[in-house]
Image (cartoon, rainbow, N blue to C red; front, side, top):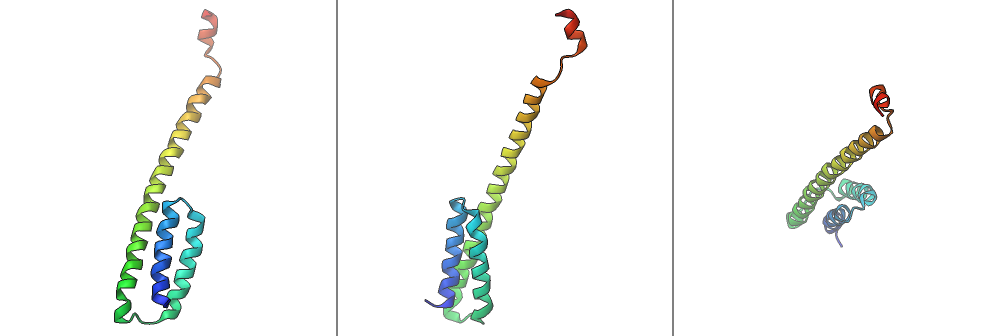
Length: 101
């Protein structure tokens, strides 16, 4: 396998990792890809499709990650709202309610 084939393969692996929610794997895959890119030199004409595939994978992985961030932000906001709601149940009753009870 050529270095450029491996670059494309690592791009596909990044998409697979983020699609499956294995975000911890992403950093190692990106690190390996960057190290490989630093050693392969100029892109030969026959490797341009491989580089284009790797770039498309990077774009797709970024799109998936942005969606995951939006989803997590929504989840955190729902948790915050739930905590505020639950906190209201534990708050002391206003004195005016106690007099009428």
